[in-house]
Image (cartoon, rainbow, N blue to C red):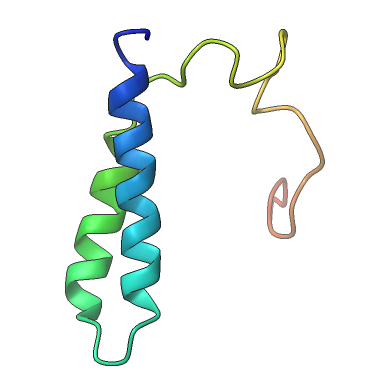
Length: 70
């Protein structure tokens, strides 16, 4: 297994568990708001082969609100 594969899988799993927790009654929203971005920012590079060759995440359609200049 590649060096970052285990870290990537574990971090994605923690993000999934956090999403499940967020849907629970009585979930601590401050905890979710703090931990979610931290986990997302700590994702290592995706393992090789996860995305097709030449994949560029910055290409694609504009989403509502993007590309608009007042």
